[in-house]
Amino acid sequence: MTKNSTPVTLYIFRHGQTEWALSGQHTGLTDIPLTKVGRSQAKALRNSVSHIDFSQTFVSPLSRARETAELAGLANLKVLDDLVEFNYGEYEGITTEQIRQTVPGWTVWTHPCPNGETLEQAAARCQRVIDTASGIGGKVALVAHGHILRILTATWLKLPPQEGRHLMLDTSTISVLSHERETPAIKIWNSPTDVIAL
Image (cartoon, rainbow, N blue to C red; front, top):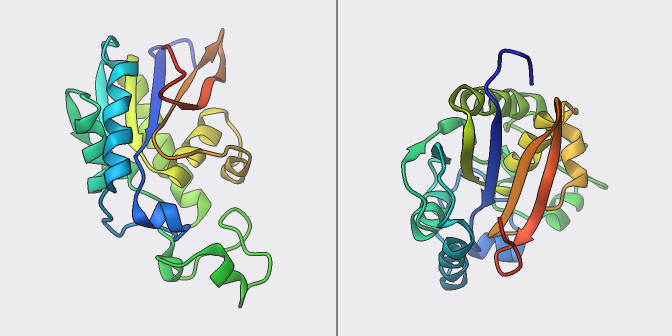
């Protein structure tokens, strides 16, 4: 945070459960809906955030994120294309175990995704999201997806995008990114809705 930037706190929400999230299939640009459990998870978010006055809520263009935001009762929604999930290219819809049958030791953090996105390209998108939110200031909600939010958090912390590998992020959780004085920091991470008081 520079002297001239607007103080901002990011409240980041990973969408609720989907069939592919449950099975471990990489779900990038495929528009998979929430499951019944995922919809219940999203509704449970409402109790944790209903008292918060967000300056803006930015949401991925994919329906699983938009539905999560709507069911959570988040208002003032604006679709932000840069919040779309990581593009897995040819690995879309398949699991890590399947990929490792031909690429031993593969992870999204250490190996490329053929015809997909690089971590650096995703981090550039994340920096644009952070810059946009910082321009608004206050409490800004981001509703999106597992890998892109982990890359965004690494970017927030001024770390290489690969460091997102240390940040496990479950479906339908709340995390908060803030500052300790001038230093970007994580205030809350991967918190289930039933234990958090924001």
